[in-house]
Length: 332
Ligand code: UD1
Image 1 (cartoon, rainbow, N blue to C red):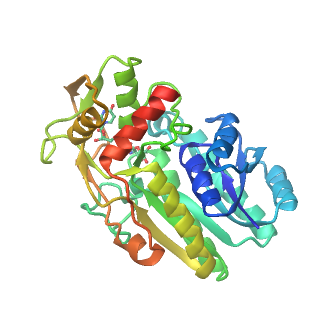
Image 2: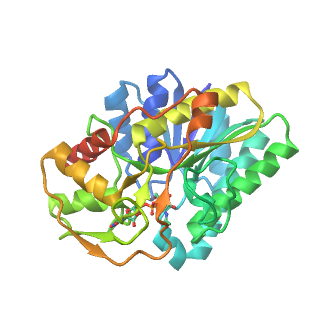
């Protein structure tokens, strides 16, 4: 039986496809290619030696999704597909709520019609909002999100808790990602942001390669060890392996369970700049700028629940993340 990855040619989806195939799982991908390219399937094959089945499909197209469930024996779904640009979600809230909620509900309806009961969902640390203090445990309060993107993650979490309650045979795992960065060490797959990047690492690598003039460091007056924002950066390959562990967990347990996927270590923006310079022997041109609205000073995980129950923990360090991000930027 196969595992269906919606959004499986995206940044996290493609790395997860690789790790699932490495773990001898059959992978089927549905992606509308609105933010990725079909050639990613070739790259996945190049890395693993095995080509996942691929269908170009917007998963809000229920008839198309239904046809995939008829074509393949699908054991469970890892749902990555969705809009994910925080700034854009503020400008286009209707599109974000429509697309992200609709795609999740469509997947759930088609899963139900085919009695498919294992689901892994890509949630985000953004659901913790600014309510509580790092390190965030899964039991910390959620809500109080600062943008529609974050609210779609929060709302889908609520939907999934309801679905698990209504059907005791469902196995749902909600993964709250912290800050995924880096790329596969082959340099064949990585993050390919559309337009001007919002996130730190893509902006930094584009600065070093000369596409951007300098990196703006948003705020140096936070109550952190050097005044810049602190985040829990996690290598995307570690994050991908977390999905393999989560699917295994879903095979053995019913109900809905939430896990943080992070390293548990907070690094500041300046720590990242220094690590990047040392790892790659380059200089990062940067300037301090005012704080970015909506940012919090410090955000890092308590990853102990995933360690205990998923038997997973992040293995790669900040130097690995910086080295792999730079290799990818030079290749892409
Ligand atoms: C953001 C989103 C989060 C999303 C995640 C991954 C918010 C509030 N959160 O997290 O929902 O899941 O991206 O897509 O938007 N920084 C700079 N200069 C830059 C870019 C970033 O100094 O050019 C700083 C930020 O101020 C922050 C840190 O780098 O302190 C990380 O920023 P970023 O990579 O955008 O991630 P988050 O804001 O943590």
